[in-house]
Amino acid sequence: MNVRRKNSFIHPIFSLVHWRTILPACLLIVGMVPLYPQTVPDLTMLGFSADNAYMAFAEHGIGRNNILFSTIYVVDVEKNVFVPQGIEKRNYFNQLTVGQSARTALVRNTLYESELLKSYLIDPLNLGRLIYVSLGKDTDTDVITFDDHETNRRYSLTLHTHVLGSSHNNTLRSATQLSLDVYHQRTHVATLTIGDPRFYRNAIEKYTIHSIYVSKDNTSIAIFLEKIRRVKDEISLEYMVETARIP
Image (tube, rainbow, N blue to C red; front, side, top):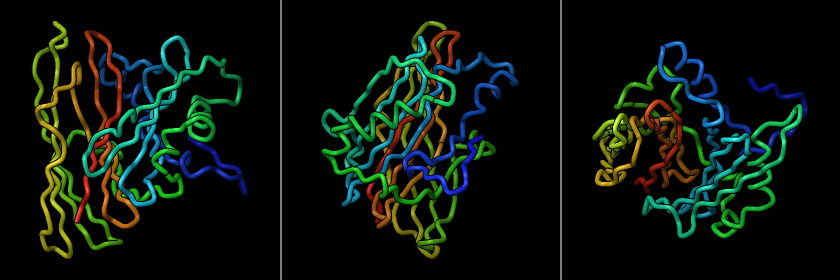
């Protein structure tokens, strides 16, 4: 639980709630193999570019051997691919002291060191709008429907997943694709197919919808997914994003 002091200032890119901080405990309760704390990253939306053609997000946390890490990703929204050299990862070997957290790695990377964010004019004040976030009760569903009351739009999103192989013999791999139906005042506007179903990711067992952002001008959408990676008896959580231009 984050406590904010009265009159204190929190930078916008660091003010998101981390919805998955209780996941390791939940996995232990239901009897699954524990998700080791050092492998659980935090997800932070970093913002869109001024023209909303690009967006950026970050994963950060404590990796193996207690190494702090921060990884920044910049995505071409329309093409739904990383920009050239669009992944920027840094490791920090500083020892955490009382009162510090792994978020310090993200602060240093974004505010002082990231040339990638500067190159694509990513604006942390242009976060767009969070229009959907999973609160846990809907994590096992592959179809969600929700309203954006600010624009009178309704979205219906379907997550398609194809899983092959098994983690027991290291052949597990999976692919995913999204189908997005957009409605405006109950009139169907468009159906978008997002993602490549031919692209299989090794050792990924499951995908779930985490959160969805739209740009301020409502022309770009970013859909964050959680990925569960299983390698034999070890489970870890990762994130990915699918993006598209919307009418």
